[in-house]
Length: 228
Image 1: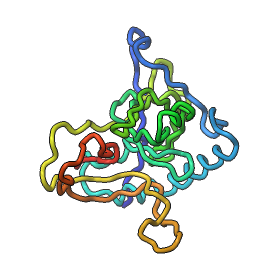
Image 2: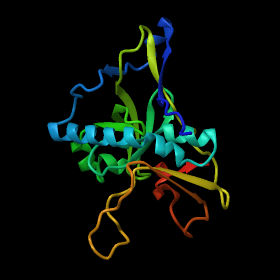
Image 3: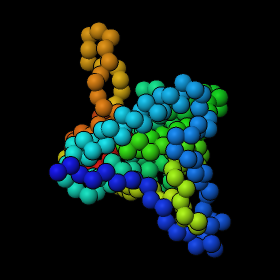
Image 4: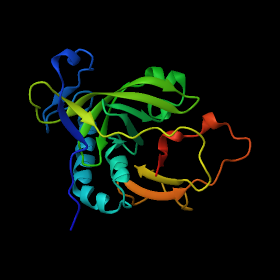
C-alpha cells in the first residue's frame, strides 16, 4: 500500500499574547497569481508544482525506513525557478538554510538580486521566502518564510513547518549521510551536452569518508548535507 502523503505544514493555535512575537506569514489562496513572479515564472512554478504533486507518493516510497528520514524530506524545499537548487527548513517558524550562490555568487550580484524567491515542498506546496543573512564565505544563506499558498486557516492559527536540527561537532568516519533535493539538470559525466532525467526531488544515501587534507571547513557546502 502506498504511503499517505500529508502536508509538511500544519496550522497551530497561537495565543493572542504571543502573536506580536511571531513574524506575520501572508496566506495566499491556492491557484491565484502569486506576488513577485512574471507570467513565465509563474507558469514554471505551476509546472513544477504539478510534477511534484504527481510524484509525491513515489518520492515517499523511495525513502529508506525511519520517521526522521521522512521528516527530513518534509523539511526539504526546492527553488521554483529554472533548474535551481535546494533548501532545508531548520526551524518550525519557517527559518530556512540554503546556499548563498542561489542569491548571487558575488556581493555585487547579491545586492542586485531579488531577495524574495518562491520555493516548493515535495508535495508541491509553495512558500515565498526572503533572504535575511547572506554569507559567501560559507556559501550559506538564511531565509525566512513570509508567505504561503494555502487555504485560509482558522482565526488565530499560524503555520508551523517541519524542520531538521543542525548537526553539531565533527563527523565520524562512515557517518550515514542522506541527500535530498533537486539535482542539476546538466549531465556532467556526459561527453556531449545532455540533460539528466532526474525527478525534481531525489533521495540518495552515502557515508562520510573524510575531508581532503588541508581543506578549509568554511568552504564546504554543508547546506546540502542531511545526516541520517
